[in-house]
Image (tube, rainbow, N blue to C red; front, side, top):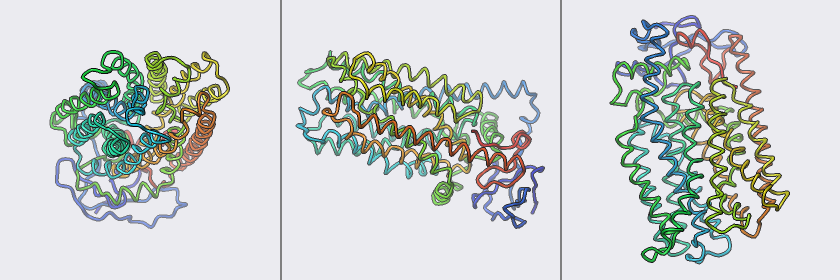
Length: 529
């Protein structure tokens, strides 16, 4: 049995999750602290492990010059970016379209055809998020357990595509409610699953911009949903006796199924379970994550405990602060679920209204890319989240204060970028602040995303047609939620600064990587603030 100090090579040990050598059978010996740890001590406790390995780069990586290392790593990232990023963006476009096309369907006669009355339409919107909330944590833990996202995520996509297509056959309120609930139940696998998926391939420095690229799928879908709906209403309304809203579900659901089939052949799994990587590429992909954090990431399914992941996530205070942060942002952004309804208050006909929903999303894609790129480049998170939210507050106040067309559309142009420009950086902050073990990260990502989306259950009742055009209650609530998000971000930043100071002093910090491997050990793990 060997002991380590902060100057020795780091040996992984955290809450009973056994390490393994990537080239050998995993060991399951118990991990033990050799010395009793004093919380006030300024030295990290020694850690022992039987039958394990010290983390060190593979020999061929150690022998590379910095220029050679950069070259092979860039080649790996290009290969990964080409296979992974376009496909998950395309899948997310369809995920978001299939979830939110009911807003466009409302303008195309869904309410009249299904004889919806009172708040039945609002309930049809919000019921999706009940199923969405129930499935997120179990789904992410299951994905982490099986380690096969290239099979799991496209399979879920085929199912939700079938459900979306079947919505076109609804004849009454009960059928619509059933389809919407099941759609949310299955779609729940995708968004938190992809956030975890990305964190299993990219380092903390790379994750923010990749998260922005991924989330651009939602923003692009917002831009194109109006165009698609306008095109279908113009060219297919009444075709074969079907109203435009029915064709909307049929066309978009069919495209979803087709894309999902293609995804089976393109997406990677995790670094250790992707067959089309060479041995050197696989070793480099694994080592990049070890080097970044100072601890190995996903090893195999035997090391992914549901209960341990949940326990670690739910006992870390940072999880709950991040939950309030994300809840505030998502709650303030629920206006996007009813954006066609809000834009309709400008008093244009259906097709111009649908077209006017596009520019705010196009602007949001641009600002999101620029903001997340700069956040990754500087390593800063707090101001890249909070400053864009101030623009959202301006937009909500302006929308509630006037009924003039030009100022209201200016407000709408700022609503979407104001919320989502910082949102993607906040998503990356979750993985940055709760990096290891992977089961904890998977549980935290799903839990935080699930709770943040509970706002969509009540928000639908703030956008009744009779509450327009100013939607004062909704805009006031949105401003309050932005305020809560800024307070949560400030609290998290304060906590992470304190934890980093402890790490600077050599004080043991629970939940941090207190010693590292090669470059990670020399530089020292620090939380991103």
